[in-house]
Length: 336
Image (cartoon, rainbow, N blue to C red; front, side, top):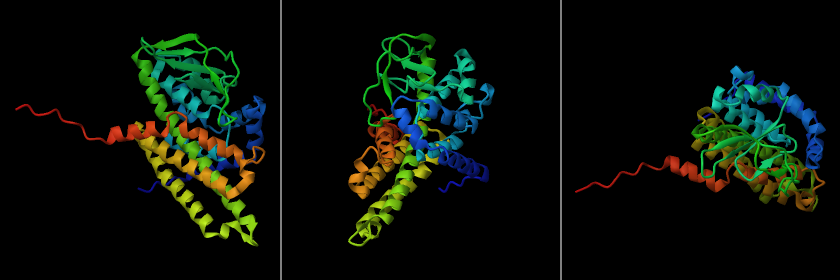
């Protein structure tokens, strides 16, 4: 199946790409890694003004959505430019609050998320991404009793080391204001997980495309034995394999954005994240020693490709979901 974007969608992606190209996102990423958020917050405001976060928020709460195809388009560009911050987590928080409806705190929190006045992070585990930078910290917990959604307090400990220094993972403190509880919280969290995986898949695709572009440019300039490295057949083959994997991931992503089936989105996340990870390995090998240095700009995308691979569901979890969805229903044995 061939997915064609309309003129408005292409213009939106081009405008976002142009805005981020002019914003010096690598500097914002390095600031964010040090816990300095001023440049990242300024970038967040500009993205919100472009309508990025409003795409996950319904019109009833001052948003533009839900519009998963346009959201996927936007997140490809955010990945292409390695934008820092709790991006998928804000989308997940918005969709969880939306799923809870007026019975939850949607009207209290969603308008500010859509406008970019506040940032959010959401966690269902031990660590919350960028909890010290987020204005709204949501946690979903389910132990022996019903699932609970809480507005968590700020972090009380420093972040733990992360594969991607710009992804600052904070241990989640206990307690916080109880916002909702019951089976509806578990159902809303499952819905939010699907949207988070879509956002991560799109981000990963953008990261992979950026790594490929940078590597093609580099091997065209770097020379060995008096000729460009990019003229070597082995290098061409690896880059062609990376390009093929990324192009196969693209229709998976937009197909999943059309259906929003959990299995389709899981397949898209696996395809895009594995393609980005493979491209990262090719980029590292093609760059040689300079690719290992943190000071070199390539590292901003290399580390993100690895971190996104397991964010909101490791490859084996997503594959298991796809396999379960495609397995035929087992019939009960016939009694004779």
